[in-house]
Length: 376
Image 1 (cartoon, rainbow, N blue to C red):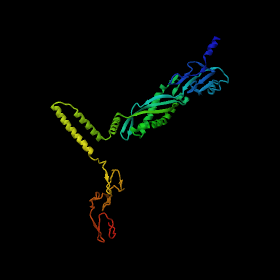
Image 2: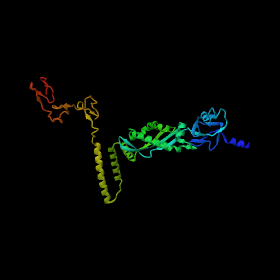
Image 3: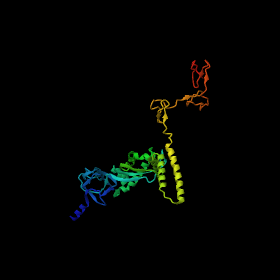
Image 4: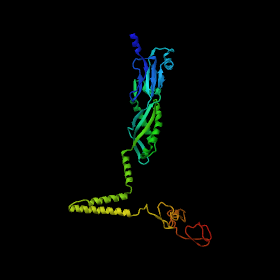
């Protein structure tokens, strides 16, 4: 009885795997030369798949649930072993539990800058980083293409390959995009969705699925950031003329508070005061001088002062665009009052005499006002 009990103890009757880690993707059960008894209980939990391998060949795949191993539940392995119905002898087979949960917070980043042609800054270099998550979608493909016959397999064994695929894909997307570099932050979600579509076939080749992909940041080169900072400063300062006046006033205040002693200090103070006064005068003259961009356009009809952008008078509706006349010889449009055509050089203020009735004809007329003769 002692020998019989020992033999029975070598037969595995309960097969299950409780994952105590967060990175294990595959676990091989049992170990060494343990034998599995026909009729044993198999428990496959949620987010798991059990794959039976016999002599290097995949036999049966079990999804989550509880099974009693028999010829009915193991048709492929039964056929391989040529067991008859009801045979209760132990058998040797490798059982691989594959974790199908999501493996989250996988970080990625561009190790080298990505070259990009930008409309505003020209050719620039970008760096990007973020996170992604994946899971096993096809246990059989994953077992054949990636895992092999190891006892265990964790995310560190494949995440390096996945990160390189991710960086290659996002680099290609950034290189092809027409989005301005300073506007990329507005399109992180759209770029992330494009990345999932582009990278999904690469993951499927390993029996995996890219569940989520996020771009956390796309950074500009230091030189470009300095240019952007300067533009931001200009926008914050607003009116540079007013800023110069403010700076001048601050300089005068600091000079007034300077308590330099002696003739040298007095001379320096007088020189500084003269320089500051000159700067202040220029600033005041610039403030009082009318800007060419802000001069009003006076309506020739009613005298109303219109904005320089107006094409018609806001008061009477008169056109503010000077009427055009045509050259008496070549016919191009010229400004009224022009004495000589800028195109052909013909004088424009000469009167003509009608060859038919002898009437005086103003310059630019096509017909005689007296007899209607067409002029050449």
